[in-house]
Length: 167
Image (cartoon, rainbow, N blue to C red):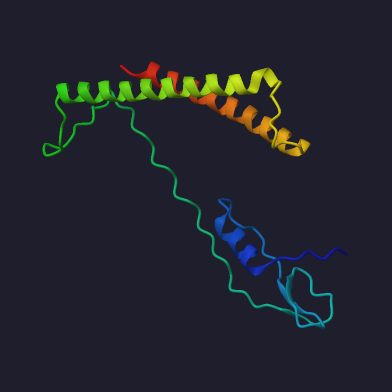
């Protein structure tokens, strides 16, 4: 016969968290071995096991979700409270323009960075430096360049996508 280790917390948590009511409850035994280590088991066939008297675990089914009433009218648009601060159209356009300019500046910097990395990477034929006598240093620099190249290309894609999403 197999013995299964069951922690009381896991058993209790499982019984409380399931959405399906627990139909049957098995006995839980507290077993103490020769070293004094305590274990919870679902069988008490080993020496030093005592049946744990657990209170009955009550389960309550979740309340049924309320039925939605079919609405014949269209949903009302959300209206801001009267005291809610509003930004006039001119200020918002200026903010949008500033945002677009910031994104364009970031794009320009990333494109310059990409050119420099591509030049140094040289299509995978990276020039060895005098301080890279150990092959591991050279390989590490090549891998870093490759990762920088991929990251910069992703940054450029993201910036272009963000600029494209502007109104």
